Length: 306
Image (cartoon, rainbow, N blue to C red; front, side):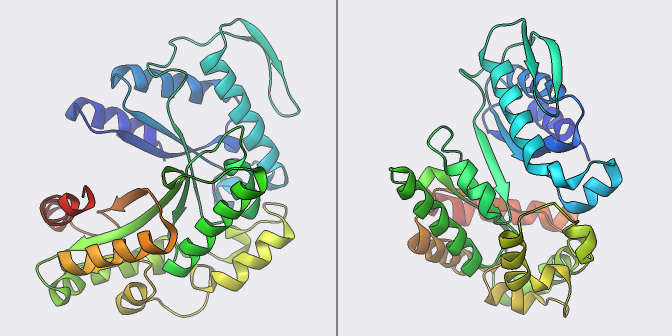
């Protein structure tokens, strides 16, 4: 519920790695300056290692926070504009929008990184979000989450098409993929050890009724139709199995050779440049998570640097 707290703990335990907070739901807060201040403080504590992930939040969060989902996009865009302005423009200044109104904005501390921490946009494929993130004023990395290989390729290609419509070619660093990954000595052992955890993630933790996932007004009719046609597994339908998740490319579970091959296939399909490896998921135990991290670091990562 508070990713900034996890980031703060990681800052104290690391010295070189970047820390991506993926992400803070901007429309759900009443004062976005709090998010601007928190990210700026974390950026200073880490000496410039923070990546700021901005999301709209899922439907159930609008129910629990009492926020009208009809204004989701408007509040997201307005909060983003306020945060970036607070990071980059010396105050005090006034900000009066349709959803947030502040007479005095004067951020302290300033972010460590100049002009501000990198901004990434995790998403499950909203066409409006793709168009917004790829706009020449932003060119934010678009990070596809919890999706099959076909959907990842579709959304990456949509981003590239949008960029061309805007008059530029999207760089590989603008295309990201967040994928549950588990590495073991063999494919059979990997599925045996991680199967229950990844099935729990998709069948229990991510599964919601449609009205909780997509409340009225949360997204456009076009995006909702695309979501219904491509994501029946997350909103309803039969149970997902580890075999099906691996077959569809929604998760990479297997030997180092198998996992690396899955990453390379996606890179060949879309040319993506950002991989967020989800090495702990569902109910995966601490012991298995640590083993997974060690094997991924020693057997997979060196090949990704080539």
